[in-house]
Image 1 (cartoon, one colour):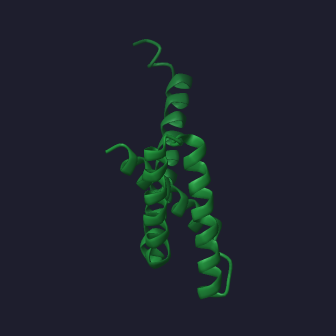
Image 2 (spheres, rainbow, N blue to C red):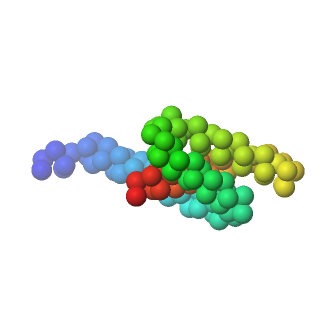
Image 3 (spheres, one colour):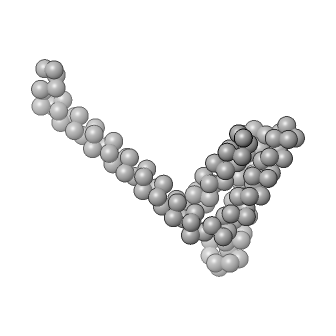
Length: 115
């Protein structure tokens, strides 16, 4: 307890708590913005996500499922998303949109193959 009474230790603990809370806040903001990006672009993401799930299930049936297969499917899915987005929006998809879509697709594939 005497250590906690030291002013320098208290200052260090407060700084550590502030840094941890800021990191948590950033993580929450990124997840909220990912959700908004997914919701706003669901018409582009949903069909490609469903195709990725089907490919993942085929890989499981074929015995080729693994991290490399998931990465390949996700990469092709993101390339497809970028193509469709460019055609319909006349601009490049943002890095945040691609990251959010990658997260959504990878989680969906993992969920589908774990059933």
